[in-house]
Length: 249
Ligand code: FES
View (cartoon, rainbow, N blue to C red):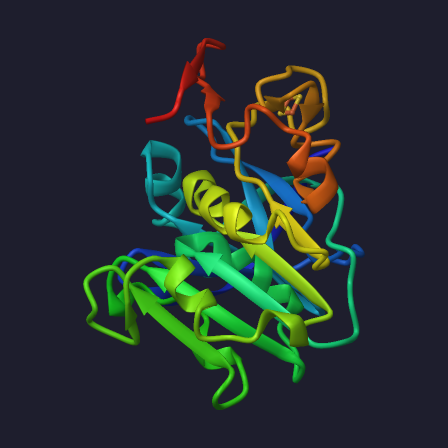
């Protein structure tokens, strides 16, 4: 079923990322996603970045469909299927949220008074949702050094005591997640990853999102550390929209 939902607010979050708010009377859990149809273009998977009364999707422009979505305004209609996917396992204790680029959109739904964020981006003006953490709980990392620590998300990890966290959640580009995985894989920390892969159907039919026999849309997009440890393809291969599997650089 496709829901027709009216946009009631659009917020520019960074120069290239914006949030679209709408009313939708469904239960959505942190980490779940929706498929958004843009008439005349295609359907794209979007993480839900607010799951409370006001729902929202947070969009980074990266192709024609998201470019068209960026032109949507208050009063326009959104065409949405879902919600889909396995949510994060919520932990009520101290949480570390590690988000790269627009990956922070998925983690935003976990931010509370016990959350610490490692927010990574290329430049300071692209740091997403850093102001939603309590003061002193947002560690910013930028590749160009224009804000916070200079470097990649892995540099942010050096600034925290990992042992104090009851749960760690990671979302961002796959190679970024892979580098975080390499640091955490031999620990007994409670870690979950949210995967971003090419998706067509969103409901386990087309296999465009598969990784090691699992479907990111149905078996994920959240996977725990044990599941990720067992993946050979993680950080190694991806499927093109043609269905061809290629090695990542
Ligand atoms: S997107 Fe079709 S099987 Fe996952």
